[in-house]
Image 1 (spheres, rainbow, N blue to C red):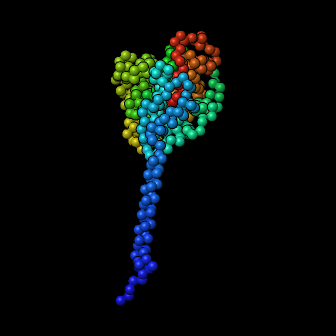
Image 2: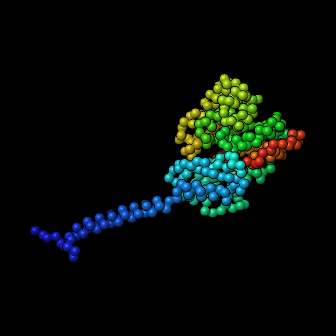
Image 3: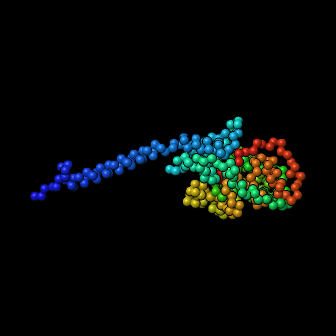
Length: 333
């Protein structure tokens, strides 16, 4: 019988190879676990990411007179947090809220653009979706066409609606105004349904629309506003049903595979106009085909619209006595 060949340690070659393989596997496992725990220890906490985002906004985006707080946060993937940022005045009154995103390693913030939070934002290039469009001169017409794109539950869209409503009541039929909607909704089914409702009221009961809208932007209570503005509900329901079928409203709402970025239901009533003007978010104000971004006060909006008249009417001289402080120029989108 052949004897096993022993090495200098007294083990056979087969035994030596087996031990060597075991040692290598153990080293790999220990290395993997060590690396995992090291990376886990180094990964920023949610608290750190929120604080870093707040500091970046304070130092680079918002004027110092505003207070910013994280109202809510949600880890939507292994690499991304959704943060709801509240903006307050010095009396701690909420002016509006904005959804933005921060990467889980705490480096980037997504707010219209991708911003590196480790680098100061150049002062000469603040994030402004309409900056390029505002360099264009507004064409003058006898009856300016005003198109305001919003999401019905976007705080910034509501700010703009509140600011423009007094102007619409002053200028009346001297302008051609239409409220339109961004081609996706960031605030769920309640927003989709409300936008169809507003579309139908404006389309078929236009004489009651501004009264309804004024009520809604104050209360966000559609039932109350339908009653107070005396909307014909039977006519409204017929329009909602037809619009739902014409633009696949419910179908797109239920088909999550069609959602923008997998998160936001598409809303296609004004899809062509959104593409025409490259609408990026709520609010977007278009005057005679040109995107403008005035301060969100009645006086500033009246001044901007009056630039579009060939001959300014007397109403352009109107001075608003209750001209509110300009709202924070944020957007949903």
